[in-house]
Amino acid sequence: MAHLKVDNSVECEWCYEMVKLRKLAQHREKECEGRTITCRFPGCNATFRAWERKEHERFYCDYKKAQKKSMQAHREKAAAVKELRETKKLEQREAEEREAKAQREKVQAFYKEVEFNRKKRAVIKEQQAKDKKAQEQAAREAEKREAEKLRKK
Image (cartoon, rainbow, N blue to C red; front, side, top):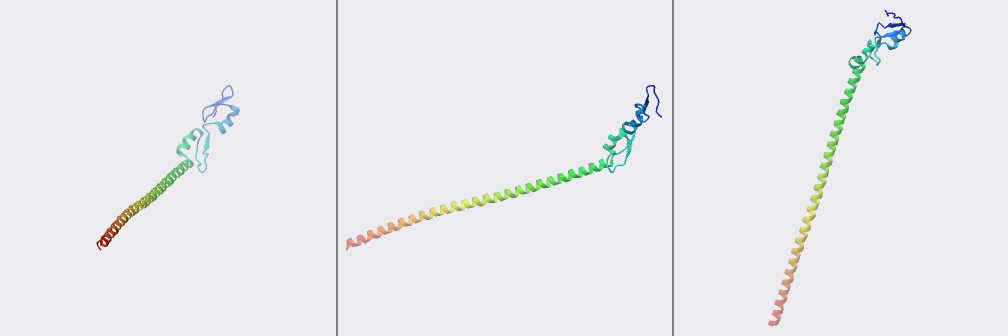
């Protein structure tokens, strides 16, 4: 029971704090750290002293434990999704690089073929020029022989 003092203050038997007698009921109901309270989180019906609230919420509260598990599961799922996205991005990037490499190889093959055809045409033109020279030479020699035959006659 509360101990009466001369200035109308009494000691609360739950928290041992000095409180005015007229405010003792209010103190015990709303302010006293020694009062018994129920956990404020839904689904957790634990009762404890008000001064134990922080410890209860941190270590023992079923709601907080479930919330931590849920958050951990969410973080793990988010990490897995992020990893999957990064893997897909990497695969997409690799596919794009392969496609770009294939395109470069096609372009290089095209230019190689163009260069080959250019050289081939140059060789053909050179051969045609040689053939033309040879024909002209042969025609001149034939003309010379004809002219000599005519002179001899």
